[in-house]
Image (tube, rainbow over all chains, first blue to last red; front, side, top):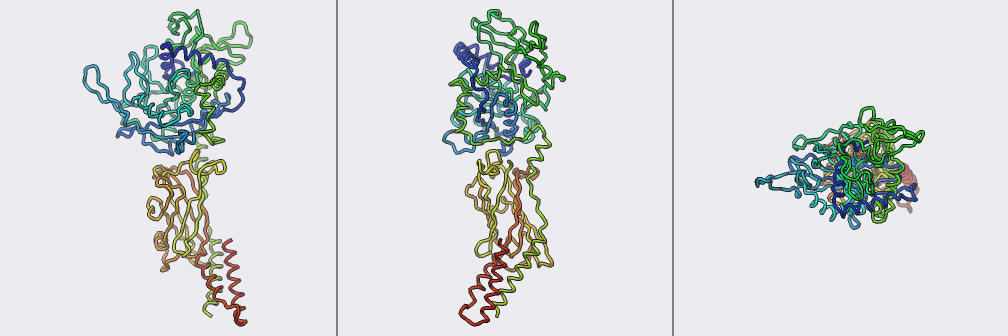
Length: 434
Length: 184
């Protein structure tokens, strides 16, 4: 389970924050109920145009020197992982061929210089503190409560620029950034590894993925170097080899695969420590970030989830136990929440409920995913993404470099050609000199 | 599909310049190896392109291979590109003197030697030869001067003259036939 302890994404924090706003709450509720209806069509492949924006600090302490070709290579790798993970839901992500309806940009990946968005805020003592991207990181989180205020790159200004540049309502946009703000969950500040809004809110469907959440290979391709940046790079418990799961979870959270409970759960009224509830429902706060046993669990049909998660033995998977269903033979009650994402390094394990929710999201008119899918042909012309397995790093490297046509020794052909040329010259010179 | 580079190589009509032209084209459904989209984009700020040429010089009995490399960054003065930002569709035109100098060929001619050439293009990340994105090699038979010679020979024959001219015509046609066999 990826969302255990909540420290893999700030999406839950953002969702909880939005659910605290009555208008957002109603919007999320409406959206979630609509998606829960599912869709009659679960088999048609749906294309989602996707664009990666590299937030590129041009300062001397930048962690990246933007190179378009390198970024495209990384984008293709992320897209490959997404397509592999979402294949069972028949979702296919394709890099855009343009960034807006009127643009001539090639799309797929663009770089944006974030230097103009560096923010400077006074501290409570009145002494000005200059925050820079280099020292504070790209701060994508919003100001809220006891969190640190927005510093570094101002998210709203950046999003305004993005709105004017990219058709973000038609293109799923993922911004690669230096770092995200710290966030608090269960009272402990943590480093979120990704952030994306729940789709029912009016937030732009723009995801943020810090460079440190990329796989080591992708960081290497991009030349990521935090040494001079003063940014604390969090450690991902899942291990470097599993880090691409973060991409999958970011998209999952933006699809709405988070444990929201917007229907009326009378038994959960009040603050249980595991969920914040009001008259209309509850939302998981994660409590200590562990199992959500008080909330409707997922009932598996035949297989223990834990046995499907390859990294379970390394304690990176769910620690919430699966137990045999008390009455249904061959069924198991998961300690995880019904909407919790479950992916391992080789496959996605979407529950039928999750697939139904995803397809429902695509079918819900007005949802961002419905918009992405309905305008996909306008922004993509690529029928097939290169099917190369990026997990097989060695194989992939050789595939990339295998198209060399070696220079050959053509001495024999040259000898023949020179002989013919000589013969022609002799014939002609004899005639001309006669 | 990886970047599938394509070149056209020819000489100028006066045989004084070797012209190497990129005809890879943009990526499309019909050109999966084209520039951009899922393949690398040809932006000058992102990639470097080297063109190496081997020239097979000498006689049919004694061949010497001369080789030289033309980095498009270094030889941008000899290059035309439709767009300032991109290498796509570049046309590199190298004068014979420069060409011979780079390949170490001793020649007093201001034209390119008629012989076999092998042209190799390599595309790699900017200034990083370890990060190759594409490579393509093609042979080029230069017959420019020989072709001009055959034309001159044919035009010198007086078809209304005596039997000797018939013999000359026969030889000229043989030369033309041999030339065509080379060009094909």
